[in-house]
Length: 72
Image (cartoon, rainbow, N blue to C red; front, side, top):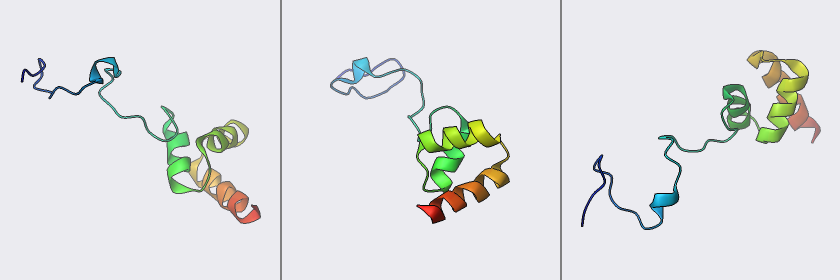
């Protein structure tokens, strides 16, 4: 069995995978969206909307997210 240039094992169907070097994460590329989605029950879409409305202050966003969680 031959291996790729960087000693990555051959995977069937792996040729079409993106060559980004990183795995997709919850929330995409925005670290604040990812932070809220991972630390609250909000979806990435809800986290993005909350950041759009209230800014990037993580403490403030967590307080609001906890209120939203309590209301639902």
